[in-house]
Image: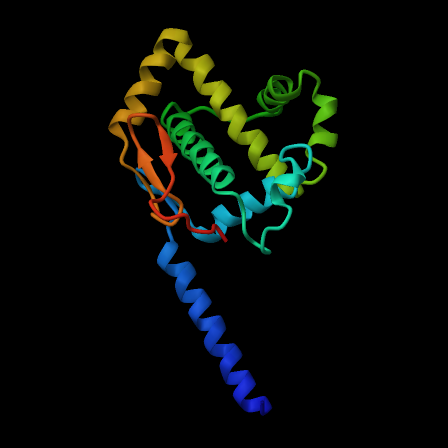
Length: 188
């Protein structure tokens, strides 16, 4: 194949792939906040690349960039929950600090020193972002108290417009989870 034709073909494939990604964005929308398809796939890559978080045998035989649907739907569900907590965290005017981040690490691992090993396969940026997500959850729970938190949690899920792109499934408000798409679609 002549080089010029190959270059044009590669450019067409790159353009088509970019168009597909744009058609999936946003992958998640929670109220006015959204997560792009690229952001979601990066989060899935982070989890899938951490053998302490995901059993590597779940990924054996998958095409590059292909992930089990259950894994992706669980990550989408977790991201929705983090987004709701972040919105309430901001509404309450709370601030993240090192004490709250350490509390998140204690909640996750019992001993914050175990975080380094557990987060070793994550990028530093993702590990910090995940810690902040958990810290915001803790702060909202502490600020609202047990009863107030339970009421807020139910109300937040019931009153917030949540959408998941059909590529990843369908948001089910009754179960507060992502139902599998009617026809299995590969994530990635």
